Length: 104
Image (cartoon, rainbow, N blue to C red; front, side):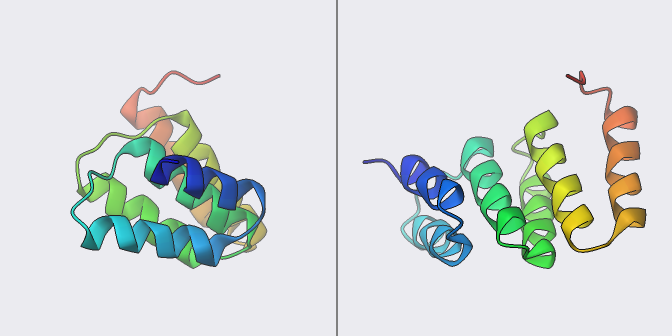
């Protein structure tokens, strides 16, 4: 079982802490962390209503230069919404428009 699959399973089960633990383990074990890994962890935090942690992971992904897509932005926007942070949600939406990522 891959770490990505484990993090995705945690996301689907609403286990944001375990998803975060897997992400830390991957980082400390020098596994390559990609957009899919981060997106699943961000979604797990969003579903666990841990919007600050989700946005921290989003920024970590963005600073790592791994690329961003509509899935990642959508998870960040949903995390903002669940945290009652509508202004931040609008900022993320503006970022999508400025980055010229194709919207679904």
